[in-house]
Length: 269
Ligand code: G3P
Ligand code: CA
Image (cartoon, rainbow, N blue to C red; front, side, top):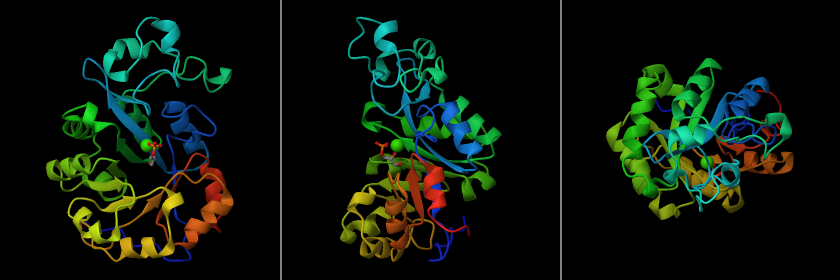
């Protein structure tokens, strides 16, 4: 695969809608994907986990309490872990009312439903394998869903898909299974370790709070698994001043709950 070119200083960083446009619609739902599309934002980020009966679903927390009505629907099922509920049970939950009554009865999407909607909207996907230590084999399973839905063809691999995780083992697992998939490690590893991460990752995606221009330069000076400079997307930047600050560090992308705010912090280009 060709390595994406590094961002020129004058270009706007890639804007990624974190958990979808999650300032405006309930996170990790199809509504949040559609809201990003309505704002004209190409990239969406999501979090993937697995149900008791082996379905991949899109959910950030390892339990259902914060973003669904699981406690009401299934009293006595404490601590309401994703891995302890079947896909059919999770499909009954309301994943929108916690955010706003306007989103009542919004559902938790399966990964298949999610990628199909991203495809329909002609968007791009930054997929996070979340809590992989809880779900042995989730990397292979995720790649299988992506493959079945047509997301591992050349067009998607070149420019429309990145798989990331806070777990180096998980990122390395994805890379070993499918070396043609672009991958990112979530975190801020020491500069001395970057060349090791580059053996399986194309990107380093750190919290913006830990970032400096020097660190971004060190990432760019490291050759990625696919050749060319490693890239860096910073998270989670929700205001214009912080966006301009990390933009000035030379980041390639910014992951944000408010993608319109971040986009508009930069001149078009
Ligand atoms: O994509 C980066 C960001 O999503 C990592 O943090 O906790 O929101 O998954 P978290
Ligand atoms: Ca995430």
